[in-house]
Length: 425
Image: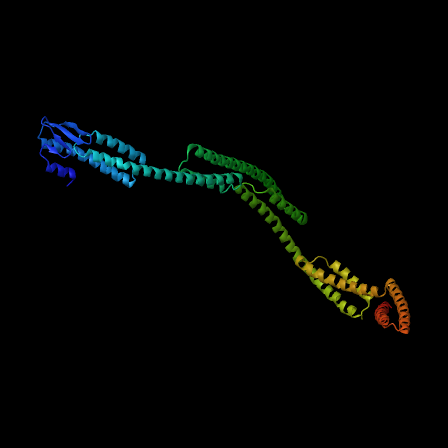
C-alpha cells in the first residue's frame, strides 16, 4: 500500500494528507506554498471527490515512473528525455490532482544530472564515432586516389564501387569536413573513370588497327598456300608470322577467326611441302646407298695414312676421285644429309691434318729458324763456359754455382732445339 493510499485511509472522509474537500465542494491540494484549488466535485461525496483527484495524481506518478525507467535504461536520447521531463514537470506543478506533487516534481528534477551525464556520454560517443568515421573516410580517399593514379583497369573499377558502398555505410561528419573528403573521393573516382575510358578507347583503336593488318596478312597467307616455291615461300611465311606478332591483338572474336585462317593457310602450304619432300626423299634413298658405299672406301684411306705407312699423294688422288663420285651420286634424303656429309668431311679433315703435319716438318723457314736457334745457343753456352772457368779459377763459389745452373739450362734448350731440327730434317 502506497504512502498516499495509507494517508487517505487514515484521514476523515473529506480530507487526506495531501488535500481536502471544502464544504462547497472545492478540492484543494497541499503544497510547500500552501493550499491550491485543483477543482470542485459537486456530483458526489467528499470521499469520491478525493478519490477522483488522487487517481489523477496516480496517473501522473505512473508517467513519472515510466520516464524514470526509460531514462535509466538509456532508451531515450538525452534531448528527448530532458524535453519530456520538463513538459511532465510543468504538468505536475500545475496538476489538478491531489497527492505529493512536490515529491513528484523532485523526482523529475533528480533526472537532470543523469540526463546531463548521458548527454556528455553521448557527446563523447559521437565524437569517437566521428573520429573513427573521419579516419575511415580518409583511408577510403587515400586508396581511391592511389587507384586514380594507377592503371589497374581490370580490378580498379570494382574496388572503387566497393569503396563507395563502404563510404555510404559510414556516419556523416561535420558538413565542412565531410564535403571536403567527399570532393577528393569523387574527384578520384572521376579521374580514374576518365583515364580508364581513354585507355580502352586507345586499346580499341590499336585492336582495330591490328585487325586491319592481320586481315591483310591472312589474305597474303592464303594466296601463298598453293605455292610450290618451297624455300622462298617458307621464308615469307616466317616474315608474315613476325608481322602477325608485331601487330598485337585484334578484338578477341575477330582475332581468333583470323588466326584460324592464317594457321590453316600455313598448314596447307607446309603440308604440301612436306609431302613433296617426302616424295623426293623416297627418290633420293638410292643415292644415299651409293654414298654409303663411297664412304666405306673413303674411310678406309685414313688408317694407313695416319700410321705413316700410306702415300699422301696417292691418298689425296684417291679421295678426289671418291669426291667426284660423291657429287655425281646426287642428293640424299634430308634426314640422312647431315650424317653422310659429316662422315665425308671427317675423312677430308683427317687427310688435311696429315698433309699439314708433313708440311710443318718440311717447312724451310722453320728449319732455318731452328738452325739459327742452335747456333745462338751454342755461342751462349761457350760464353757461359768461359765465364764459369774464370770464376772457378778465381775461387768464387757463389758465382760458380750460378753459372753452372745457367749452363745447364742453356744445354737443355740446345738439346730441345736439336731434336726439333732433326724433325724438320
